[in-house]
Every structure is written in structure tokens, then in C-alpha cells.
Image 1 (cartoon, protein in one colour):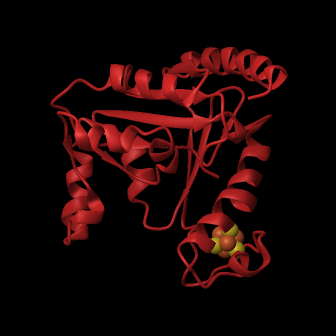
Image 2 (image 1 turned 120 degrees about the vertical axis):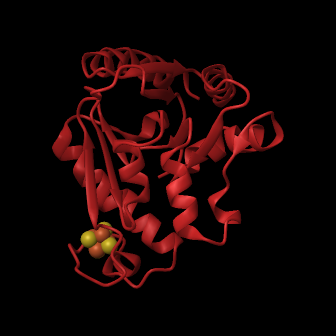
Image 3 (image 1 turned 90 degrees about the vertical axis):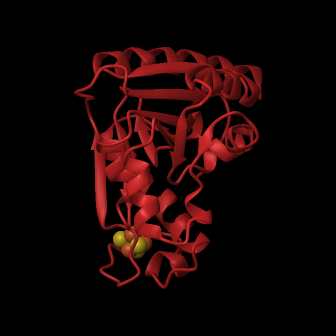
Length: 209
Ligand code: SF4
């Protein structure tokens, strides 16, 4: 990572951490993917039940592999045939791993979901939520964050899952009501009612999309 970009990210992360604190959430800054992995593992005690939703960033820092190999009860929803059972198990987990489609520099998180399993688990259920966010997802304000979620994250996800949506073909949001739309639910996490529940690791890297 370029030294000037790193300096900018470090300064921006300090502002974000203060913003998260004002919203009853806890933020951490990791200068590298390796630091992010170490921070995540420091937060998750061995023996914890852990599940995830839409967490490409957790894969990219090596967290999912580490949890699968380590002394954790990793609930792999892809390996569970009964998807409803997998979804319900997530709500009772000790930790839910996820990312954000976008974040404001003041600590608000924006997430879009089709099935809503991810946004509902962020909102309530799992005892703790661990969010891994690359600094590429930080936006100046809520309007920019919503635009990023709609015009960057959602179209890429629609393409990734092979969905028949306008954005899969154009690369930009057309505000569709297609049966395949992944923009069914929008969650803005503005404040956490419960202290010590939502932890956000800000990574000095480009993660996810
Ligand atoms: S509303 Fe439709 S076109 Fe817009 S990002 Fe969502 S799925 Fe794509």
C-alpha cells in the first residue's frame, strides 16, 4: 500500500473509530490484512460458535480459513442443506461475521440484502457482530454510502450470483423491481442499543466490493 494512502487511511480510520464510539460500537484499525486477522482472532474466544453472511472481506483476510481450522464451532451455512435451519442457527451464534456495503466516515453502516438473513442478523440475534471493512468502502456521508451500495456493491453481487437484473447487464442500478432483485431490504446501522455487540475492523486495504 502506498505510504500516502496509508497515512490518509490511518487518519480517516481514527475519525471513524470516534464516530463508531459515539454510536455505541467499537472500531479498530488494522494496517495490513495480517493485523486484521490477528485483531479478529483476539476478539473471538476459542470455543465460540461463529457464522457469517456476505463476508467476502472475512475470507480475504484469511479469517474464515483460520476459524475452520481452529478450535471454534464454525457454522458453515453452505454445508447445511436445510437453509432455514442454517438461518435460524445464525441468530443464536456467539459471533456473526459480515462486512458493510458502505460506511460513512462518521461510522454509519449501510447494507443491502435480498433474503435479509444478513441484515436481520446484524440488527439482532447473534451475541456479537464482527464487521470487516476495507477502507475502499468509506464514503463521505450517508447519501454517498447509499449510492455506493446501490451502484457498486449491489450490481457486482447481482453479477456474482448470476441474477437476472438490469444492473447485471448495465453495471449500474436501474432501481428495478425484478423478481431477482437483491435490493429488497436496506439496513442503516446508525447506533447499537447494546454495548460491546458490534465491532468493526477497518482494514488499510481494498476488500470485497
Ligand atoms: S435495484 Fe435492481 S438494478 Fe438496482 S442494484 Fe438492486 S438489483 Fe440491481
